[in-house]
Length: 279
Image (cartoon, rainbow, N blue to C red; front, side, top):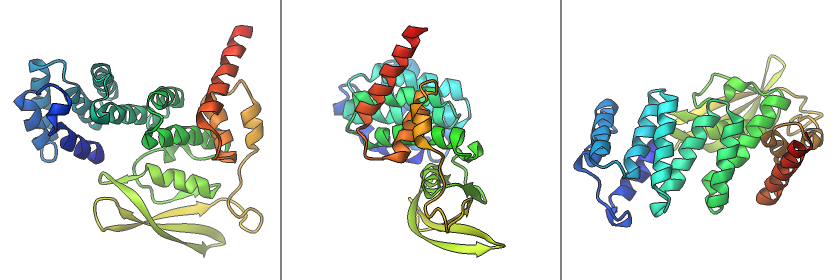
């Protein structure tokens, strides 16, 4: 959440880009975000009452509601922001899209998360954050449903240990972790052996500080046989047209990360539509 708030503070100071000036309560809410979220939300609600058409207010109300674990309320605010910000002023609509997509991913709703990410990517194909979200949703869906990855790992909270079946699963997990609102920046890694089990210890630095943390991965495969990990037959998953699109896409992307994303996803949706028409 910190990253979204920081960017929005910079952008909303450039009000001329929006062609409108939000109420004073909006700026007071911005100032309160770091010290009193409850008071900040009250100010944004007052700003909404005074100007019901300013998309930035709904974006922040959405973030704060999600932070309170009021998921549906938060999504409704974010959707309202998307509706009011069709011009994508200074790319702020893209930011709202990424937060809404993530709200579904963190709830393990792969269908909705992928569908929304695909809609966003078609509108903003240059946005790497949306692109990576699309890729990661596919991989989470594939690894959890077909490769034995523990679904409880799909959380932003750092856990004591993760059991993984491939190196790729490690990096997928690392990209999702937040520590005190900070993303993890890779610093290094080392392999250790403990009680006949191999562990990959990844050292990371927090994105907004110099603090160093370690993330522990237990490697659930024979290193002498499978160097980078053991993954099920991705082609078998990809060829199964009855599976959800995100799982088939995830299998394809895991097998080859240089595919043409747009072309392959369009192909999968075409196949799905053809299957529906048959029945």
